[in-house]
Amino acid sequence: MVPSLRTPLERVFVTREGALAAVLAVVASLVCAATPVMSPGVAPVWFAAIAGALVMYRYMFERVVRAGRPVPGLLFAAHVVVCFALVALHPLYGVYAFTGYIDAARVSSGWRQMLGTLAMAGILAFSQVGGLAGRWATWPVYLVFVVINVAIALVMAAVERARERESRERLAAAEDLLRIERENARLQASLADRAREAGILDERARLSREIHDTVAQGLVGIIRQLDAIEAADGERGVRVERARESAVECLAEARRAVRALASPRLDRDDLPAALERLSESWAGQNDVATQVVVDGVARPGACDAVLLRVAQEALANVSRHAAATRVGVTLTYLDAPDDVVRLDVRDDGRGFDPGHPADGCGLAGMRHRVEAAGGTCVIEAAPGEGCTVSVEVPMVPMTEARAAPDAARARLLTSPEHDRVGVGDDR
Image 1 (cartoon, one colour):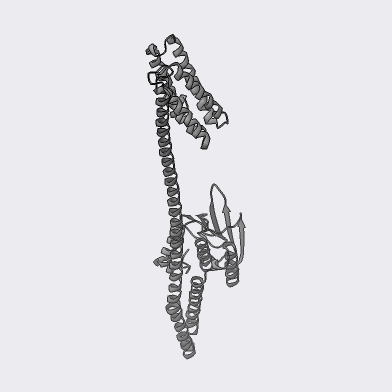
Image 2 (spheres, rainbow, N blue to C red; image 1 turned 180 degrees about the vertical axis):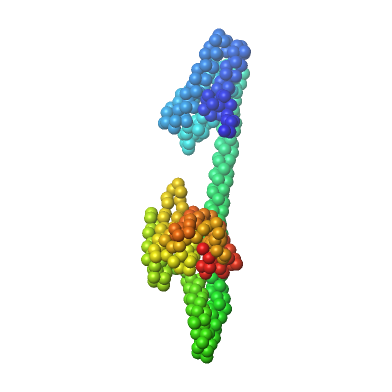
C-alpha cells in the first residue's frame, strides 16, 4: 500500500489550506501575546483563548466546506467580522486574516468572491496601518493600502485562474490524446484482422488451386489409364478394379479437400449445423448410424474450424479402420469458470491399442492442430471396445482479437502435417 503523503495537520484539518490557517492562528496569537504594547490591557490568556477558538473554527469550517453544504458563505461572512475585530484588538492578527483571501475563492464565485476579496483587502489594510492607534492610521494612507491589497488580490486571482485554465486545457489535451490512441489501437487491430483474414483466404485459394491442378488431375489420368488397361487385358481385371477403386476414392477425397478449402462449411453454417451436415454426409457414404448431440448454448468461437477438422479426421479414421456400426458425435459448450468447448467422437468399432498405434500422421496431425489452438486432445481406445476422441478448446468469442488461434490455423494450412490431416491413414 502506498503511504500517505499528507502531514498529521492536514489529516486533522482535512485540507492543506485548513492546516495553514490553524498554524497562522496560533503563530499570530503568540506574536500578539509577546507584544502587549500594541494591545495594552489585554492579558496573554485571552490570546491563548483566541487561538483555541480560531483552531476550533477552522476544524469545523473545513468539514463544512468538504461536505458541500450552503453554510460556508455564512461562516465566511462571520469570519470577516471576527478578523476585523481581531485586527482592531491587535494589528498583527493581520497575519491570520490573510487566509481570508483563500477562503473567499473556495466558498464563493463571481461578485460574491469579489466582495469577500475587497472586505479582506480592507481588513489587511487596517492591519498594515497599525490599527486604530497606528502611526499611519489616516484615511489617505488607509486608502492607499486598500488599493495595494486589492491589486495584489486581483493579480493572485488572475494567476490562479490562468493556472486552472491551463490545467483544464492539459487535462482536455490528455483526454484527446488518450481517445486518439484508443482509436488508433482499434484501427490497427481491425487492419491486422483484415490482413490476417486476407492471408488465410489467399492461402486457401492457393492450396485449392494446387490440389486441383496436381492431385486431382493426376488421379483423373490414373483412372483413365486403368480403364484403358482393363479394356485391353481382361485377365488382370480384379487387380485393375481394385486399383481403380482406390484411385476413385482418392479423387473423391481430393475433391472434398478442394471444396473444403475453397468454401468452408463454417462460411455458411455455425459449428453445430456444420457437424450435422458432415455427419449426415459421412453416414450416407459409409452406411453407419450416426447421431449428433449438442449440449449447452451454442455460440460462435474462434476455434470452430479446428473442431470441425478434428471431427472430419475422426470420422475418416472410423470409416477406414473401425468397422463400426454406430458413431456418436457430442458437442458440449461449458460456461464459466471452464469456458471451453468439448467435442467427443465415439464409435463401437474394433478399437486398437493406444500404446501401439498404426503408422501414419492422422492422430499426430489431430493433436498438433488442437494443441496449436491452445486445447487438449485425448484418445481412449482398447482392442474390441471401440474408440473415443475427446477434444477441448478454449471458448474464444469471434469478436475478440484472435492472433494466436488465427496464426495457428495459418501454420496448419501451410505445414507439412496439413497435407496429411484429413486423409485418415491411421488411427
